[in-house]
Length: 428
Ligand code: AMP
Image 1: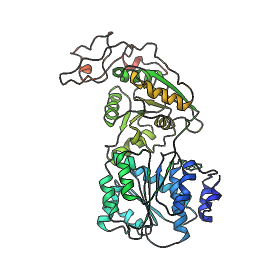
Image 2: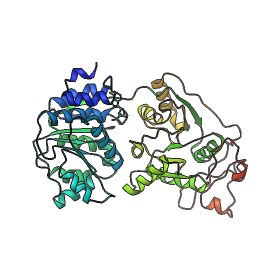
Image 3: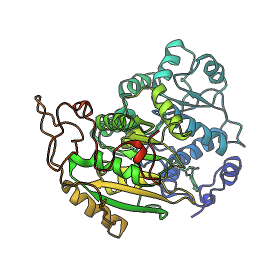
Image 4: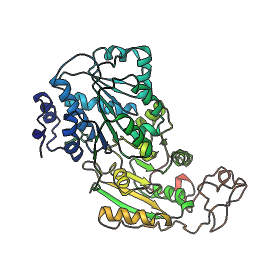
């Protein structure tokens, strides 16, 4: 199949050609025809599948075939950075159409947005600032024809659903609606039922990991994960590392522990303000941070081509999520490594991932790591001390040690930073 079969307007086809897209991706094959037929679509796809072009191209086609003034398409995205990515895709794919796209998000001055909104055909917006414009009457949505809610599960995770429902009240009821989400929890299902009319559902999974990535599993007890991670960081040559945790709380606390251990690290989770999120992402991209700790959802949309290592501090909950996470390393010609810390409880998931990949992932142990350290005793409130502490085998850390009391950790041979191996990643 090629793009000709969609019969795009010559000016849209020219955009496809300029972008050098030769073959439509599976989500494009499935989603473009129903969108062109003016159907509502529920798209289950992650970033990296080509889903932006899957909705941008038919929208451009619709708007150019029958030109008229006003904001005719609204695309809602959870973060400024995703909004910018979509805007860039519109600018690049629509360069010959002369349709105008404007972005609307917080954290920047509102006046330039107001000016651009006056002439925009397509608006790419984060919900908070869009509501602001609606309240100020600086956006007219009465001529809207297409609404796209992108990354709906991330929107939900970031608490945007009440805002989205408020925005919906200001949109014409007669419109085409497209909803994209990587996962389909009950909340997304409810939103889909409320806003989509007789939708076509399209779905793509991620099936094969980038073959430039080398994988390894590091079996370890739950309470020794942080210590093992630190040892791993010291013994491997890293450029920049993306570490995944299962929960927001763990991302935050692990980010802090890495910082306490001397690494330039930041954490990214759904609760961060737009400004702090941006600062963490920018810092990771420009090398200010060597390590970024994130949950799956918070890391969505990161296109960090220089990531040398992905470390799954917690194993992901599905094989697809595994492949998606490690797809962030080894992009283009670079080769990357993906390490996954696994506990006894992860056996079934490891089996499922091996099956998806088609080969068992190599298991590794670190030679001088003490795997026999007992968990730290519980604190009075019943919570175990985070990270445990490795001193002598099985013995808890002495109570008078300040670092231990604060929940910091040490590991055999760690000594001081000066003694770290030459190859290892040096704390900042
Ligand atoms: P997305 O999933 O929308 O973030 O797209 C991921 C990347 O794939 C972007 O860099 C797109 O420019 C690129 N892309 C989208 N569609 C195609 C295609 N049909 N052929 C080649 N690259 C594509």
